[in-house]
Image (tube, rainbow, N blue to C red):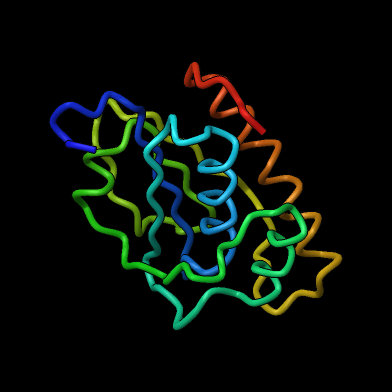
Length: 141
């Protein structure tokens, strides 16, 4: 889509390594919105790869985040976002007036077993669904 004519809300999910929580949230936002939201994610210190346990947990939900690559958080991504959701990145996230900011306190799934990551995943799904509803997006899944 042309960014100049794209009227979809943009949501940015941010966590430190962009390898677990933010990638799961981005996966849910894409799936639950059916493309009605532009989704971005980034990290203040991107990891080398996506957490394989997070990939497995999301596959159970029918969402494949296995091809995602951790990205460095860019100031322009924050500037372009309508909603910025942080998950443990502390003061590393730039703040722009007029943006919707939320900090979701979520357990870091790094190094955790599948059962723990499922709990984090399920919490993220509920939060993403609520966020999309608040943004006026009709959920499709």
